Image (cartoon, rainbow over all chains, first blue to last red; front, side, top):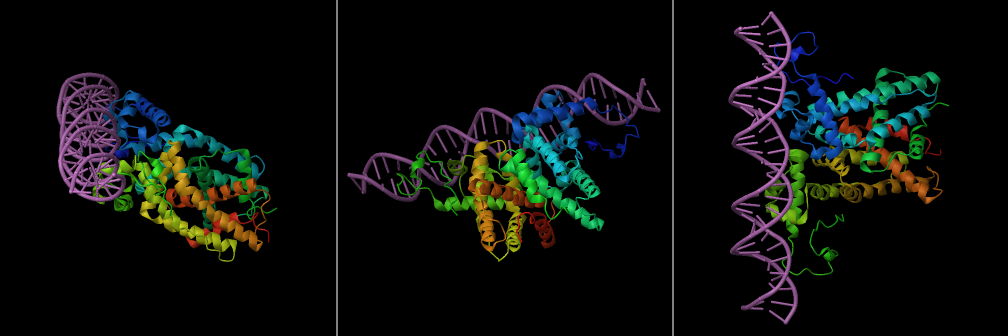
Length: 216
Length: 216
DNA sequence: CTGCTTTCGCTACAGGTCGTAGCGTAACTG
DNA sequence: CAGTTACGCTACGACCTGTAGCGAAAGCAG
């Protein structure tokens, strides 16, 4: 998990850890404590109840320390939540259907966690008003997961379940569409409709998807 | 547009307009002014910038008047946004593909409006923490649009493009899945990925969907 | 026209959050 | 050792929330 430096330091050139900073170094333990406290507070109080002051107290840190690293709640929560998505993996179970089923199941479990529920849609909502935040969300949370689609497609193509790509531009669009479809649908089902993701639902959903894509 | 009475009156039995209230009646003009002001403020300031005090001032109304009718920002925005969704229609253009294309286009236009963008995800986010609000969102915004799926399916079945339903329970699940898929995907594309809905994208998306569903 | 009732706009208020500033102290470098 | 930066603490003005109290306005029943 790369977890893009929270750093809001004046000399942002210090990034790669190569150059040494001059004065007292930032406490790495504080970073962890803050992110943990943020996730806990999200789970308990939700997005609306999450307060910078509360997080600071809970992390055993001064509020000013918090603001030195993250300019606002939005950025803080992006970093706090991003790592949760890194656990998703594409398993390669021998068939495209089984692979999709497995990933949908993992995603459903992730969306069932209170931290994720409290944070995800709220972040997306803030992102619609702040292009920079949206970019950060995409870079930290959304886009990294597209690897799952790429891996699953590659495996299916190797098995002969899917046609090989003609050109890379088209393939990238295809990945984007598939990703928006699976992520969007599961999110809508869980977070908007408020219904659980059952194995039966997953089966029917995949029935809807698998058709023109599959060769045999 | 039914637009479920905002009413928070003590005697909520006055609903159907049959029974007359006793004292000075609520100003209907104030309701309209408030909802308009809410939509305008949403478009200009976004969800985070929307303030009860601001809306009241903009509507030429006292803040207390606002609180007499809507208990909080959430409920106010639900009512303000719900009516925007009533314009969606299922056209019946002679083919399932054309019908879906048309509805996706309408939905995309709706999601392109700043009021909708500012409000929708924020409401969904609040709904994950407040079951009552989620119910209200579903009743006022989400569920009414499922008629589009039902109408489109019925038309396609009449044309012979889709198989007839076997049992009603299964049909309802099917409608739910299709709805979550189309709504979720388009929302994710526009509001999360931040990419526009082009005709080319719509075509490829429908390619993905139409397959096992269509008979011929 | 006269009560009765309810809404209206206005003002004021306590409670909470935000984000910043100033201070003295702690930690690390040369 | 001096220099630099992060730290915790306190205090602060600005803002938003949601409620209360007031006198005036707008309907209805008699």
